[in-house]
Image (cartoon, rainbow, N blue to C red; front, side, top):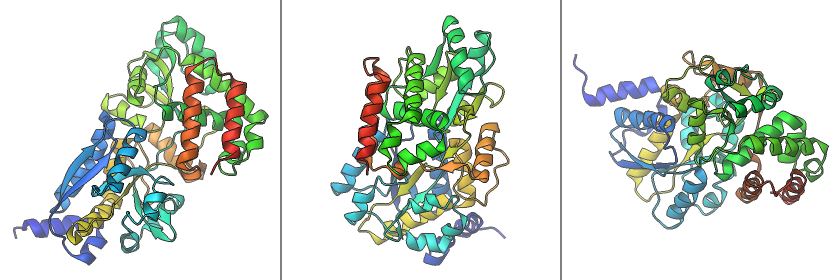
Length: 418
């Protein structure tokens, strides 16, 4: 028997586990504009999996709304459109506190019925990811991945050219830096955007101060710990890293990653999304590059990541299609296909990633062991996060800001954090 397009689509949807779509029926075909800031090679390959899934498994059409730049560039544009009455169908944010004001204003679609129909509470791991999409008891976003900042990526070529062994922890990285410089290499690649320097600082804080001190500052907002001896060591280590990063002369994070890929830099402190760039470049984990979670000192991962929110639209057909896309993004097949390209971990705890590379396997093992911590977007308001970003830009950009002065300013921010 020859399958009709409608029957074939129904079968595909069943395989993907789209029980919500089955319950609500087939929505009228619409165009769904989806905004995001995924524009690097690895990111574009990953987001294409979402577009492919929507176009092949529904009657709807994905209209790509990529915004060049980082989330810091894209988020104000996205928020302005929503507030200005020109909402997109779906938009990327980090799951956490970035959309609280939009939700309070009644501008975001409640996805609780989708989450219940699809059983998200039974499959999202860790549960904190779904908690970060929940506001006043209702679910407003789809967490699509687990992204961790806690990594340093190391170029085998750079260390081979410098005739030193590839480091296995932060102390070895610091010790090898002079040999890299003598070989004409940049020890540490770092882009010029504020979130990169702020993120690198956070990774160093975990490695040097440890989880207890980090949690005291970031979760409990303990200014005394921020001003204390544990974080004194962190700022001293960051000041040393600042010296290693001189000469990067790039702006975007993926440009800094490319310095590592091409052997021009020894390493980069960057989240696991960097894996997508290594993959696009045809490099193999463990052969061409190494990855050290927690800088090889404290092997933990943060459980932040990306989520999609759906602004309220006046068209019932559009709302039905939005909910189909939400269910699709969480389906097993799409979770695997997207995250293998993105370099992130799936939010579903019931999928298999046999094709994951060595670095992803390390992340999965850490996740399974429960050695996790919340992401900065889950513990700080946007205002507090912006203040820290501004401080880190100033600190990493100029030797005029001493480690002592930066720590004092940092402690003041934590004292007033929300």
